[in-house]
Length: 494
Ligand code: BGC
Image (cartoon, rainbow, N blue to C red; front, side, top):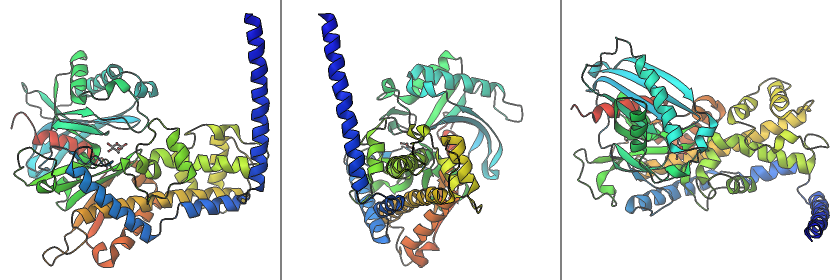
């Protein structure tokens, strides 16, 4: 009996395979008779679907402004979380002493210490960067935090004498945790959800400071977390320390997000005491922005559906470093299947999700050699595709350009949304305020085509007159230093 069942299953299995094969043949036939059959047609279609004319970008900026209002009105009022950060004062350069920071938010984490010397600024800084073993990104909270606390412990023990930490004082830490967190105070907050490839489900809903503190206790680290901050908030604080006109911070790295200084009165969901400064920093979590105006393509939709967080972080999936290379892979994969871009067989490596990273895409996009040798080498080294023709390489660069241009232009539209919400896009009392936007993240820093396109688009969107008053500055390292500065502002000893 058992045997029969097995045979029956095998027969059904065989039938299913045949049906599937017939289906694939049918699909191929349909594809071949599809108007989108030539490589140029697929690229043209992509270009059309990714188009971001100024009129569309303005609609997106307006939609961003509307969602900002909704997110500030009530908790859960919008896809934009508009999180209250409990940072109502940014550093003033009165901060003094030794402070630590821990910056966790991507595949690496950084630990750093600074010696702050009041008006003279940062006297010394030292840091160490440690990569996170991939299994810890999807394991348990204890394993991740124990690993971090152990590395922190090593770093503390290397503190030299030039850092003048007064004996008898507990060391203090600013913790940059670059994921959406619902804060209840400056030094506590629960994880709303993971992004960027992290997925430790037991951690969601838990207080990240409590978890880190427990791990530090287990590892024998005597340190107090005095500020919990998002990387955007750290960047804003670090940027403001250097330039008083900094009012917005944007991260374009593995993930993407923005924070800005809001008037406390413009935050209806804030029921706490009115801050003396009259202001509150808001962590927008703009990566989760979604609007019917966004130029979404079939590649975005399948990337999202197959991601660790379907339906979430749609804006981030269109503009940030974690996903641009993967979008490129998806377009190339379709072209390999449908128009034999790389010859008769589909290169097997091209099936591997996330095999094409954005730094490699950037290297191909920036290839200026006449034969596009960099593109040829990357295709060979990463995807094991050799002997590509010049026209194939040109096609690859064209796709890089379409995807990077769309990402950069959308990011510019997001910034315009913030300028509009804060009234920084128009005259105030007859004057145009200066707005400096502190930018950080590897995508912005290293992908110069993307960065230039973003800057040009922002100028185009705001117009010549306003463009003179809006400046983007690279605030390298800002998020870690900013966290140390905020730890100083919220020290238990002041
Ligand atoms: C996170 C944000 C973070 C951004 C940049 C996003 O995925 O949700 O909290 O600021 O990445 O690191």
